[in-house]
Every structure is written in structure tokens, then in C-alpha cells.
Length: 75
Image 1 (cartoon, rainbow, N blue to C red):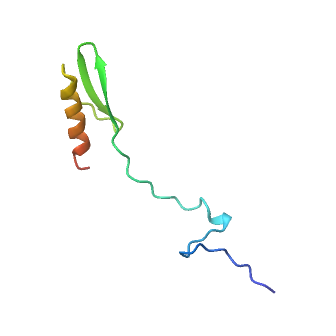
Image 2: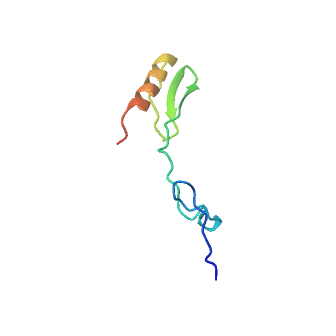
Image 3: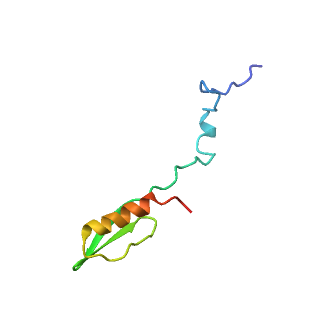
């Protein structure tokens, strides 16, 4: 009786279709995506993580707030 051989990738990982999708893949940490939103004479920076910067009259300051938020190390 012949044994059923499970195909393996060159590095030894299972490639058999039954094994695909059964183990949760690690996702890279969510990147902070910032944008600026204008409300009347004010501009504020916002991020996809929920962070919001203060309202500014100068767009350049709102962009600086966003850049500072992205540069912060994660807590």
C-alpha cells in the first residue's frame, strides 16, 4: 500500500490544500494614515487610528501635527 505524500514547498512548509487558510496569518501592524479636514476657516489633522489633532488656521500646522503623530512610537 502506497503512502499519501503531502507536497511540501522547498522550505518545508505544507502546501496541501487542506492546510491553506487554517492558520491565521500574521498581519503587519496597521499603518497610520493621516489626512487633513477643513471646517470653515480651520483645518485639522485626522488619522485612521482615531486620533484627531487640534483645529488650526494654517494647513501647514495641521500637516505638522499629522507628521508628529505618525512619528510617535506606539504605546
